Figure 1 (tube, rainbow, N blue to C red):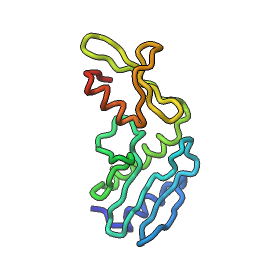
Figure 2: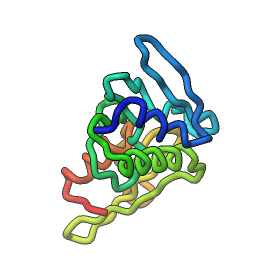
Figure 3: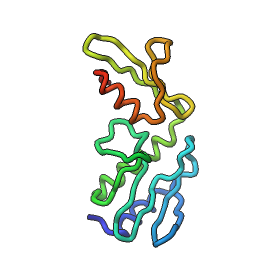
Figure 4: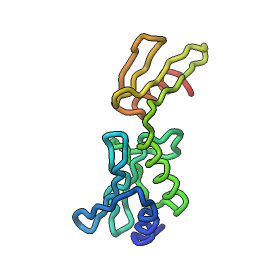
Length: 148
């Protein structure tokens, strides 16, 4: 496990992140150039090595996020930490709306589109559902038998 100091050094190597010291020795890092409302990339990095990185908008992520879209980085390696931070910054830099087409076994297609901060699911031009997060929308589609 990387130490607090090692994690700080890795995170501080990203010039686009701004350090913000908070209570109890914890540190947040903000991405001020974010095109989304979300600006915190690294959340509550603690001297004990625990901390979180915003990962909800990252496509094809291989780790679970909590209800705030954060992934715990306590046991991340240096490569994993650099990778998730780079992906987080990239996800907050995208100005193009994200759109995906999901298909079920019968060949039916649904379109998942990010619009104005929510995730809408369409059948053609008909709105089928709206979800607050990508994760919630993807879970819904997956449970209904649709895949990317």
